[in-house]
Image 1 (cartoon, rainbow, N blue to C red):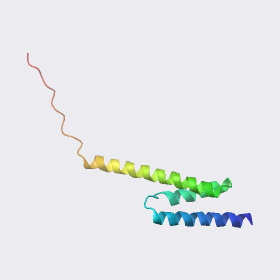
Image 2 (cartoon, rainbow, N blue to C red):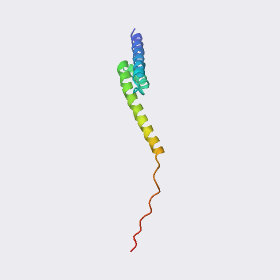
Image 3 (cartoon, helix red, strand yellow):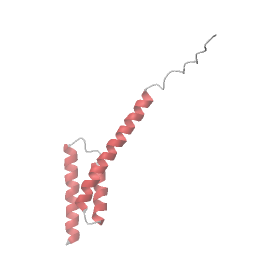
Amino acid sequence: MRILLDATLAATACILAVTFTLVSANAKGCIKGAIVGGAAGHLAHHTLLGAAAGCVIGHHEAVKAEKTQQEQQQQQIQPSGSAPAPASTKQQ
C-alpha cells in the first residue's frame, strides 16, 4: 500500500511540474531537477520535498548555464581589441 501511495505522489508531482512548466516560461531545468530530486527524496522518504528542491536547484543551474553561454557568445562577437599601441619613446 505504501508503494502505491509513493508512486501516486511521484506521478502527481511530475504532472504538476509539467503543468506549471507549460504555464511559466521561466521554468527551465525544473522538470529535470524535479525528477532527480524526487528520486533522491524518495530514498529518504521525502519524495515531494525532494522534487520541489530539485526543481529550484535545476532552475538555478539552468539559468546559470544560460548566463554563462550568453557571456561566451558576447566574447566571441566582440573583437578582442586592437593591436597594442607601440611603447612611447621619449627623446632627450
